[in-house]
Length: 332
Image (cartoon, rainbow, N blue to C red; front, top):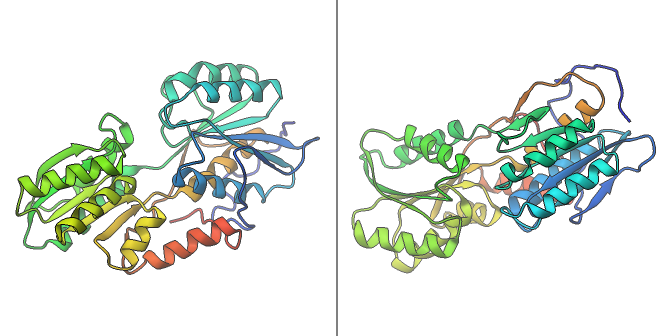
């Protein structure tokens, strides 16, 4: 069901009340009937970033008495087949809106999403935009400024300068490029990037790359990983070599937060606000299905860099949202 009232979309962007609740790969919040039906699609629920995005989506859904939210997932970041079937099924089942975080599946999903829009279903893309499809709105986290902060932090930890290495996660990916370029933009002139490699988000590859960097550059003083998944491999390599370098990662995964909080090898991480992204995805989809005026692009705020000083607090907040004791915030 679609409504014609047009309240201000920006209302209520301070805090999300209500609790986040866990769900399986397909789990509905609310009941059917005359309620607005929203499908939230994620690439997988075996990845921490997406389970945390799910928690934010579920928390926001609790704000609406007339919303029936279904969170579902594909089988992986690069498998579009299951995604397409779920989009088509949502059209058949007369969903009012679909919010989709496509991962690496975007181009393949475009025809199904275009067909959904033609059938009257509102489409919200989350994370990376899908250039081949026209969405009704896009929830966007600008990676570059957050990673520029990380470059500045690296420079502050190495005031006398020095050589560093960079390990990226799928070099051809637009988000990975934004992260690396943003990080470089924050580096002081006396910081020199002497090594660059792609670990393809795999810890084992990141460990091998880190070991090679240490061998080739005896004076290496820091390593930046564009994702915390791969940072774990760097941590293992440095521990094995007995080296203490400045290590900065991206995303703020819980395992890495424990390392940062304890002062164990990793010094910082850029926070990818998964919970806030999920909440804004649902908020935007519900607003569109309700007939509200929504911006073509909804900006996700950035949060402070995670360091030893705030890592324990961030970790506690993540756990509280996942358990349902706290809701995510929509401002950084």
